[in-house]
Image (tube, rainbow over all chains, first blue to last red; front, side, top):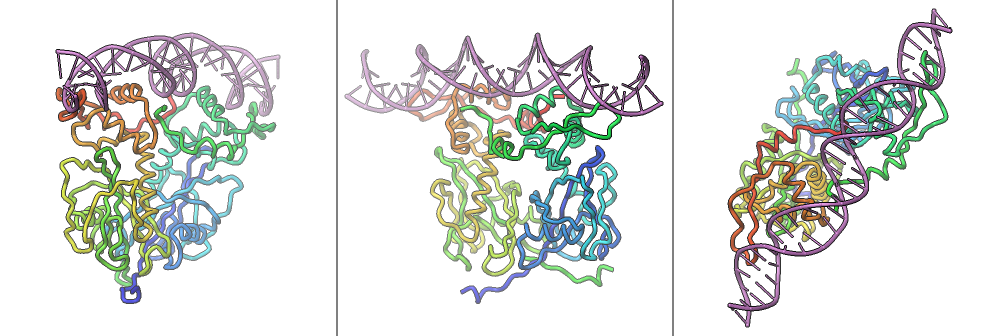
Length: 231
Length: 231
DNA sequence: AATATAGTGTGTATTTTTTACACTAAGTAA
DNA sequence: TTACTTAGTGTAAAAAATACACACTATATT
């Protein structure tokens, strides 16, 4: 039966909204396109999905080819399917996002030549982007802002060891809102998902703060669905 | 420049996970397929998107053609892109969901003949479904369960006038959890998004309950993002 | 008319969570 | 030693969440 039916092929793409946090600034990973259309424009890392790969796999591959970043786990957040979003025809795109720690300064080096370079750009200096990528970016930002307010995912953006002040700064940047220091600390420490280390910050010209680590095991226990409504 | 570039066409589909609530049961809208592959199987209402329509528009059109339901607003929730999810080739599908009031018994009548019929099936009696539709359904159910616990969207499933007990039953069905009557009422009434009516339930063989209406205006004011973290 | 039945409707005390708020301690640099 | 800068800390008040049980009322049944 199957052989009598027409065969389908498709063209669709993946775009990645990758956030990083560095020097107190929230950044986003962009590439400079080296291909028409929009050659030499800034764009989100994104490309066509192959016929024989799942979209999740494509996301990883594409991010690697365009930026050199490897094995980054991303979550899908929305699919953009306006008719004219791509000048060459009907191309819908599935958007993924991730949050990365920038410490260690992983090098960015496109592996394919679809991109001429890949760089971290502060979110507040976002340039004009190719296609509908500004819209995609905006929705991705919205997504993490939402998510961070009910799941402490911010750790993914910080170095492995961090101070509470750094953590708070990050929350403030994403939520675009000042937070109270004492309440913030109380709340975070109460979650019980931070390990206090015996180490202190180094190289600062003032009192050094304690360093903390994120305790992934306790975290996943804590956030296996906890809903409102008592019994 | 554009004319030198290859033209792209694509094949992709929409699937709809539509919830209804009737006689104390949560139901889902299914069709019986009248086309290969999976002819005569149960399936979610879904079909291919046309080249010249946005995916949001396609969702509405497809739901109408397969079930006769018109102008239903749906939200996208996930895109399924495994390589072998469709036997005829590479077809990714964008899944949408909606919650509907079943009162008034809108008639279900496929307008195209891709479906031989469309019916409401209790979620607890879900049959075997075509393609990967069971997976899609499960993720859609997860979605509303999640959503209902931070936004009172349950009204969309109830008739325009409803009793607090009906509302509570619905929450209990979706959350799969018994709730305390007094606390539930206190909480709901405190939101201030219910209008108490001068009417009472009719045709019951016990004390009739007051009827309420959902106050959409107050609701949208209340739920314009309210995040945790004080100041 | 009396009674059984089934769901409606209500209040309070306790605990937990959230919020507001300001000063001292520690380390570095001059 | 002093000036500077950030780290670190507690409490009281308000708000929200929770646990819990019984009398009321409309109808159907006899």
